[in-house]
Image 1 (cartoon, rainbow, N blue to C red):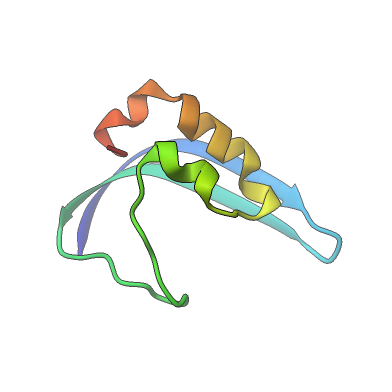
Image 2 (image 1 turned 135 degrees about the vertical axis):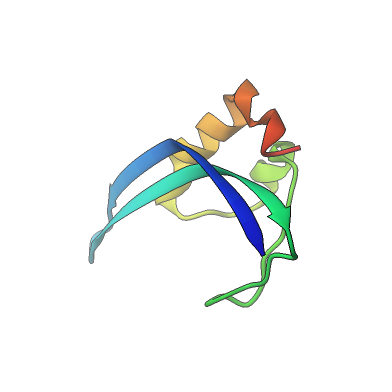
Length: 78
């Protein structure tokens, strides 16, 4: 698959009891191909209005809030 990587949208540092994670989220656009799950059982493209229907790790809470509020996401998330 081919993607165009845009600007950094969010950076998160989250500390769990057993470890910390640093996550960087970039705005990207699918140019060609079909996304395939790598290192996970499955993946699913959803509308940002559906985010509340899924469970995410605690580290993603701020990112999910920002996605749900961001008007600039229209070109990247239908």
